[in-house]
Image (cartoon, rainbow, N blue to C red; front, top):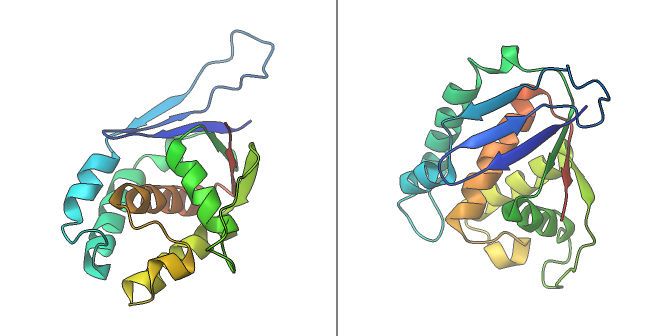
Length: 166
């Protein structure tokens, strides 16, 4: 079983319904979180890149929303999504080492939690003064907010991979 993830402007949804289950009586579990990209972007007042303190405040907000809810979710290590920002994340992950080459990525593809963490570490380097383009990090608040939510979700809820679908 995997969970279908959508991180939207106003909320985040995780649908744990097992689409492969032949039994229609299997209950669906859908988690709707009051955690959207718009609210996080509003905390990032320094455009185009937030400060490290703004990122830390966003992380704390995401953790405050996630932590009381995680225990009620079914255990699955796999996420899948159709979110456009996830495709940008996959491009950033693929750009490690050669960010100036455009990479048309075939979908679907899978990102490990380690790949997501590596992109986040490059974001931290950018916030510390490294050029974003050199490290393949998009200088867009939407991307940064998406990365923060996804990273915290994967880390705290035990998701080991993200399947990025077309």
